[in-house]
Length: 394
Ligand SMILES: Nc1ncnc2c1ncn2[C@@H]1O[C@H](COP(=O)(O)OP(=O)(O)OP(=O)(O)O)[C@@H](O)[C@H]1O
Ligand SMILES: [Mg+2]
Image 1 (cartoon, rainbow, N blue to C red):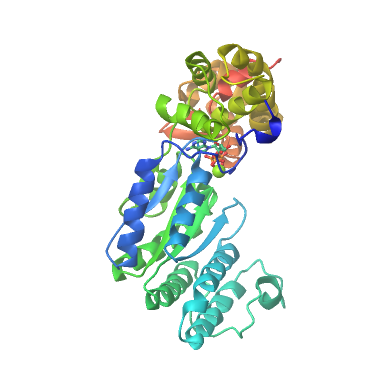
Image 2 (cartoon, rainbow, N blue to C red):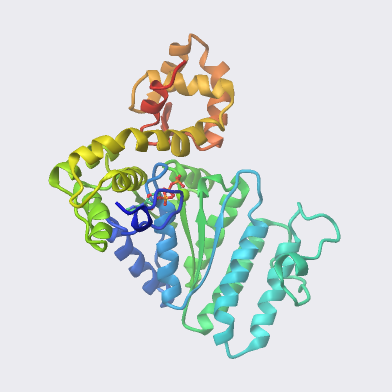
């Protein structure tokens, strides 16, 4: 059928034509927004899940919900080797800029921007003499004595408190959205938790909403034991059969196209409910099918092409980030099956001592390709990755 009208959207962070199966999380986040804006105690939300399961898309949806309520919002994507200071400053700058035009007291905004600038200038990675004015567009002088101590925990708490009070003047809130949150550096994680803790105690309407890999809760609790009381963890998983069908049918119906039951069975068997795969198989199947309804045969014809696109775009791009030793480690994991596997078993598979494999394992965790699901067990962050690896020529 006409590829121009193809509605499906495989791709990292690509908004799906129909966001299905996430009603519960969306309803929960509605409550969070409402309560926080009213200064009620409430835990913020952190989304966790495997690669391609729809965390970024849902995080963006949450952000849109906040914007609809006239909140100020900013978003960052954490990176393993980067301090949060400048990205957070940028996100809060954007958030406050969104609400500033509605504020009656321009000097309050100016004061906040002065504090924000002082905070950003404390970034140790900033070359001496760098002007934050040029890099961030803050055209007020930096203030002294607030959020500029150099201690991230103190500074972030003060900055969040100031930002929250600007929003509180307007009866709205501020949402800071952090994607790939497992990559936030340890000292920054602890500062973030401390700042959120402080805000939740004094009712400041600012929340940090996160998304990350399944081990994110343990990253947070390793840094502050009270993190479980700050965040409600929502594990984002595969779509169930109804949600996966709807993800395919609803966009197709808008183009007057439908699927036979056999086609839907075959698509669910292939995509296994993983949102990225649903979009990928849906897209190729649409292009292959000659007319509506799309049939099981169309799916069968499309499958090899969808698989080879996934092999390049979804699996291959990730595999290529690994070093030869890390690849060997992942192949050994794949040989052990699809369940989380004890690290000792991977070592046995390779005929090596577990300790000699730590660099490979740690490298893969840092690259976000594997995670430790429980003590001593590791698993792939990428669904069906074991199957992909087993199909590769050695
Ligand atoms: N609820 C959903 N219904 C239908 N399609 C979805 C849904 N959620 C996500 N998708 C689709 O799945 C794909 C992956 O989404 P997204 O990039 O948000 O995943 P992710 O969990 O952030 O992955 P990663 O860990 O690699 O960043 C996108 O193509 C998106 O359109
Ligand atoms: Mg993502």
